[in-house]
Image 1 (tube, one colour):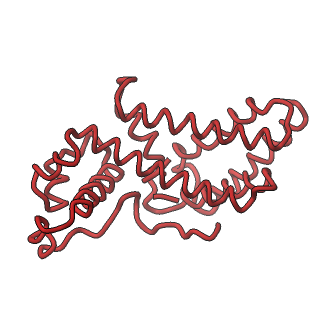
Image 2 (image 1 turned 90 degrees about the vertical axis):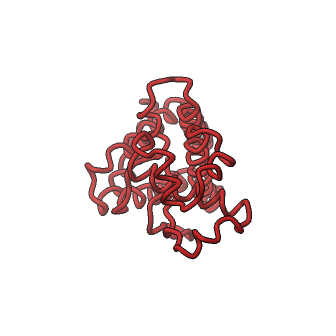
Amino acid sequence: MSSMAAHSFSHPLPATAPGARPKPSSRRAATASSEPVQDVRERILDTASSLFYQRGVRAVGVDLVVAEAAVAKTSLYRYFPTKDDLIVAFLEREDVDFWGLWDAVAAQHADDPAAELQAHMQWIGERLGRSNYRGCPQINVAAEFAEQDHPARLVARQHMVTLRSRLHGIAERLGVPRPEALAAQLAVLINGAFVSSGLLSGEEATPVLQAAVQALLAGARAGNT
């Protein structure tokens, strides 16, 4: 729920889309063969992540990634044997980014689960308001593949499972009668926001989400979930 780039509190929102990096200069391309292995791999992943997020994974071929990253095709396949491996690496990095931000917020509200939820709605709302926001990377990629066992769908599914699990933990800390029901409602709210960003202006996304959370909490505490 991305490159989660992906993303208010002490961590500033990135100004570019997930994975976006400046294009390599011709000089850098000319010396690519002398770059450390990790730098080459990261440059390929940076480039692919930006292209995947901006255009969709099916619309981006490895030839385009190779050209934009200014590397040999053999270099790409050395680090990512298939395009699916590259897609999975993109989603896994977005996952790390998303949960890193989530954990930073959670740590600031360890003793107040209600405040934690509102803080999550704050940064999620700000993410929705970014001009270059194109939705959650995991949801976007999963929608491009019909095969339930596709590696990208498996990563996306685990992201959703983790989201609901974390929300369930918050609901339990809130002490509501049916934490599993509240967790499901909150997960639907968050995922619905990620796919409906076009319906909300940048200014209204956060207050809409925070108001929705307040309504869900009121219902949960009253036993109406």
